[in-house]
Image (tube, rainbow, N blue to C red):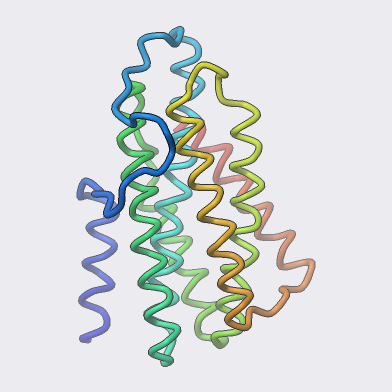
Length: 208
């Protein structure tokens, strides 16, 4: 019960409370820059991409919270909680950018959170090595996804591009940390299923 209380609290905060960044943004850009120079079409396109990225951060919170709940290793638990705190910065940045672009978050965020939490909990129950393996593969796929967004975002949307670039660097580091902590290499069919599920999520979240 003591473990469930902070887990439920984390879910409610992620889904219903404004996220607050705990560290300064390191890119040489002002996050509060108004997107007045973007056309309406560019703002709509950038907003849809940032909505997808926001969903990714909702799922990251779920994944790391589930991993912290599932493990009995205090070192692993502390790692997951620290990673979740860093991912909260991403959540705050994407949330703020959605507001600036006049876009809304996904209406299905509770569903995305529940799905990611369930997968993270299953992986965690199979052991820390599997849990870290799931994180490693997730972060690798997210990094590739963010790289594609850097290619797709409007060239003039310097703020969104800066946010995505910093997120991409953090995700790469999180993946490497998981491998350093003993992540297993997941079987190819599992990786393919994860990629397929991510494709469904990103396609739906782009619109809803």
